[in-house]
Amino acid sequence: MSEPFWFNGESVAGLPAGLRALHYGDGVFRTCLSWNGAILDIDDHLDHLRRDARQLGMTPPDREILRQDLQQAVDVTPCVLKLMLSRRAGGRGYRADDDGSDRIVMHSAAPRYPSSHWSRGVSLRDCELRLATQPALAGIKHLNRLEQILASREFRADDEELLMRDSENNIVCGTRSNLFWVHEGVLHTPELKRCGVAGVMRGRILRIAARIGLETRVCDAARDSLLESDEILLSNSLIGVWPVRRYQHRTLSAPGPVTARIDAELAHPRLS
Image (cartoon, rainbow, N blue to C red):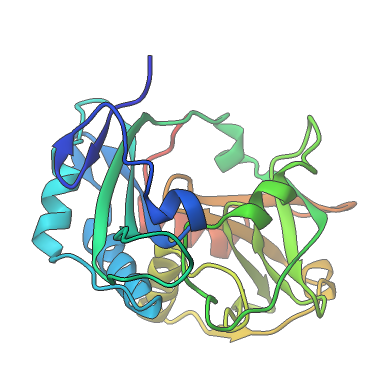
């Protein structure tokens, strides 16, 4: 059975073939977790979505319209809601005739992961594919995810996440997660001015660190920073935080004290 979806607020059986999201990946999206009938971090998701749309030169819909679109897709059981904005179709070709947007919401059952991903951590291995440098798209969660698709082809049966770097060998993120590491009590996360996605959970973690007085550095860093770190953690809006127990051939104690504190402050549901 196909997953339900809505187009501009209406439940539909199919989407228009002329969508620029389909032809060009011309749009933005956010992935939200609905838990016990409530959409977690909905305001942050809407803020990020509308900001990203503006960075692409799109005119985003009103927040309340987007909120209503999401609310009608909520289920009583845990589920994932993907909210997309596609630049409005208006003839063929790359140049758009209209900077308005069409709204698409998709509903999926929430994924499940082993409880050990939170209690004992996950493995992280280097990905060979490099992220392209494009400052105009850096930080934006746009609909063209071909780099992540190609990177995901490198997963082996025992892999849990892969680390992605840019063309200058700076560490950036996981294939589906933002990256943090702790060294000498300082929380670090990569600068995302050239590539990568600024996730909602990344923003929450940075705000938590500021609130609890944890020193934070947003910086460019080579992979050696992870080899010298005391803790590594991964985040996204579905998993919350996963500690890393192994990076390449190095074993870490997971979760470390900083990771455990952040996880407790987040109080994010565990999809186990």
